[in-house]
Image 1 (tube, helix red, strand yellow):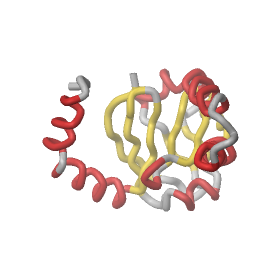
Image 2 (tube, helix red, strand yellow; image 1 turned 45 degrees about the horizontal axis):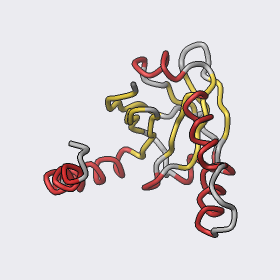
Image 3 (tube, helix red, strand yellow; image 1 turned 180 degrees about the vertical axis):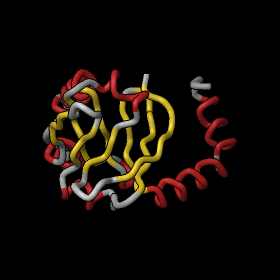
Image 4 (cartoon, one colour; image 1 turned 90 degrees about the vertical axis):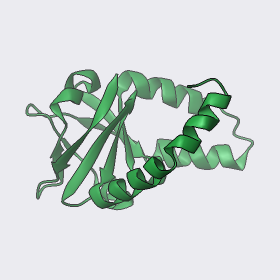
Amino acid sequence: MLIGEYTHVLDEKKRVSLPAKFRKELGRKIVITHGLDNCLFVYPMKSWEKVSEKLGALSMGKSETRGFNRFMLAGAVEAEVDNIGRILIPDFLKEFASLNGKVVFAGIHDRVEIWNEARWTQYKARVEKDADRLAEQLGSIGVI
């Protein structure tokens, strides 16, 4: 399971080291795609195959489905993790997530999210203020 929060720095060649805690579970070949809330989603190949199968099974008749599939699938790239644990983030994804300087890796169960550090800090503060209400809502449907 991918959990935890780590801050790393993009180098001048747009590479970033994956946190050591994530490397084994992610493997040597990963998929990076547009994420929600202007972050990037990083999936190990096995998890990505499950996600893409679910997306591919959705009806093409609905414009929302087509749009979301385009967002996730057309924006996805396969990437290799180099021998020292670095990945190269393509420019269009780096621009989408406003990545520069420090980035935050957040482990979210079956994926890792990559965030602009300032955006992550703002997002996390907003969610932390609302955590009790969110817990109540999740409790009402049996999650917590």
